[in-house]
Amino acid sequence: MTPVYFLIVELIQLYKYALIIYIIGIWLTQFNIVNSNNRFVYILMDSLHKLCEPSMRVIRRFIPNFGAVDISPIIVFLLLTLIQRLIKTNLIF
Image (cartoon, rainbow, N blue to C red; front, side, top):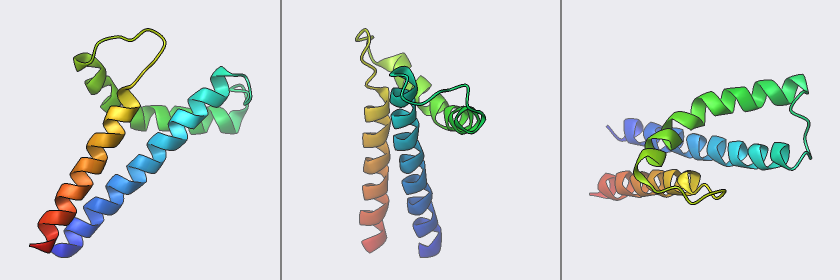
């Protein structure tokens, strides 16, 4: 049973990395540092958008709108960290 827990923890960690890359990519395209017309950047950002946006969309339904500041990635990241820690602590017992 423990390999399943380790797999889940590692998948959550990979999703957290994808979320961080997606957030940094959004910032870089919004500040015109990276051109979103580039084929590689477009494919990467589109893939990350399809992967990360559904979880952030669920969180956005429950939090108020703060204008230009979007805190949903932070909340998703914290929830994923909480789930990881719960799995790790239950794995010890």
